[in-house]
Length: 380
Length: 226
Image (cartoon, rainbow over all chains, first blue to last red; front, side, top):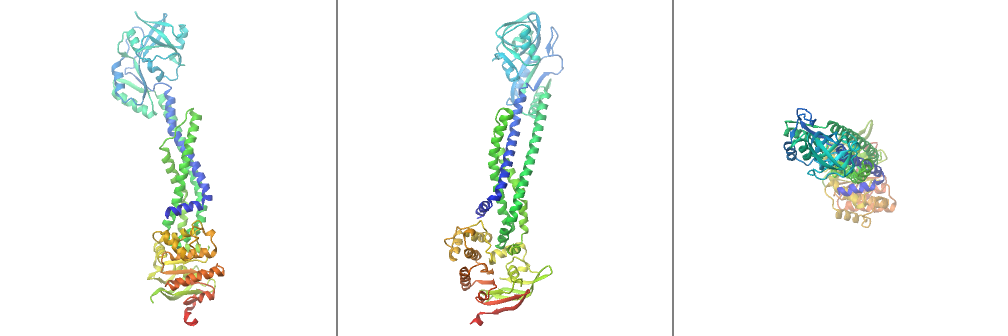
């Protein structure tokens, strides 16, 4: 009988409750969309920030130059030690990692900065690079290299041209596989395989630094960096703070904005429900007086009305969540160019929030506790 | 017969107004009492106190061994559910519940609902074909008969009827009165407020009020009529 009463109440007051359900559905839709955005935007922003390049750098602790100038003794790290540690740590969050050995070599008798690295990681580590030609697919490929835009211009190189690199009395040939337009210092560098540069510099299995790109929030990057630093105490492991902090600050601001908006919408929804329920409570005074005269306790009577309001909140929250998912999808497309998928955890959270807000908005029903049946039945 | 209702020196004040002023009378189980008097004489106040809808300022109102004046809010609620069946002049049905649901509502607040029993109660008052109708789809007489079925469904000790035919035409008045006669014949105790002397004469006894006092305490009617 309880639920029969609840649904008859809903049916009987559908006109007035329509206003409340509209407010609840609208509130739930916007809240659900915002929560989807809040969760989705982390991934999107993290992806966006990862395109800015590596966010952790491992270098020798001394701070000595990692770039060899002529016969200058460099401060280096054993490749196996650094790479081995990277492979031992959980790799799920590592998008890309590569060791580097920089030397100043000569090409066509002009000094150029030569970076030896894993060329297959270059695209992942520096996703913003524009490339004319092709990426080098294998880190074991010693015969191909990538050339910065400025170097290519100075040496009049095109994709497919041979390039002879000299260092002291040694030389290494390679074919230009791609010309890099990075918009930064990389435009003045030549990128070859790590093994080829180690061989050219006669520094087998030595590297000057390593770069790691970790996916996730600023906190995830910091955590990974801390673990890496603990595993490599003899080296300097530092997150690139401009990237992680900018990401963290932006996410923080976005979250604050979203939380503020969610709170505001919850309050507005509660106020709208409050107004409807106040009017409904006045309408229901007669029914409550009658129910009391029939022996209904106030807890039982108000329980029926609260269940009615709870059903209203749950139904409105349910419908609104689906609308919100569609709204988030559309907003994702507009803002980020890719859709933001609905997150399952948003559904129960939105529905629960709507039930709570609706029950809060049902506070006027408490007035029904003061109804005196004798007065109501007298028509007062 | 055992006394079902015992009212002793009952007083009810609304501010400076004395609605009931030292009222005392007794009602035996199975009696039909007509409560009469002009408007504002305290009839409805008495019914409300006996039905646990209101509390007296002083005095005793004992119904089936329970002094209503001593009950708290929860006790009054239980008392109304278990011992009283109300029939109001204005029917007071819940407008968005069907006839059978209105009857079941009283069952729900009493204990558990039994739709079949509620249907039988409606059939008894001649509304077997109106079970699923809303109050707005029923005539005044039919609505009052739903109210009678609702008042009876929990087998109350005392039926309190406040002008039960006051809003009915003659035909429906006769139907409702015949129902009350049946209930009385079955042994139900009825206290009925009425303005109409012919209706009052149907009762076993008549109590008349004026200005909150009994002016004709529990006069026996049936012997006089006989």
